[in-house]
Length: 66
Image (cartoon, rainbow, N blue to C red; front, side, top):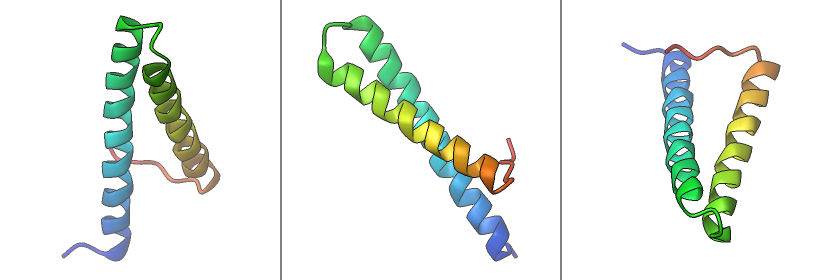
């Protein structure tokens, strides 16, 4: 049986993985159409989300299992 801590860690890891995947997609789309401001903004937004999560993980001293 999973503990609450295990479930929370799994949730955070799942969200983080999804953000990384969408960031990769957004960066690819943005590089294919560099003049598209929406795609550039989308890429930047996912990068910001990733940076926020990285910062919070660091400040709470949480390391995600890979």
